[in-house]
Amino acid sequence: MDPLTSLCTATEKCFCCGYTTLHKPTCGEICLLCDWEDSGMDEPTAERLGGFANHGISLAEARANYKSHFKMYPRGYRHFDDSPAEIAAKQEIVAALQALKERRESEHEALWATIERAEALLDAEFSPKFKRREVRNE
Image (tube, rainbow, N blue to C red; front, side):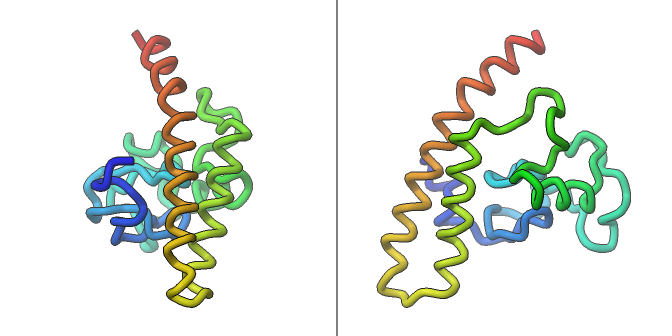
């Protein structure tokens, strides 16, 4: 996993899922957990439809979708559904991030290792899908 995009170096919370998954505020970075593109849309604009960055989906709608199925998009939206392996990896990451808040510091190293393994799995699952999308768009 690239240390510049890894969750272990993230410093900013995603407005959609609420987890610290981003590195620079409002720079167009895409959240690993929910796919929200950080375009600066936040609480005061949550009900407004999103722009190009988030395919016209409002922050409020994206949050509801994320709570339902770990993705900002509605189910079946443009072939963006996650595989069962991706959903399991996201669930593992969320559980570890929650545990980081609740556990002693001595347990953090093992939790970060869990997060890094799940990130690698997400990356391995996403790369082939991304290539298929590129072929479809050509």
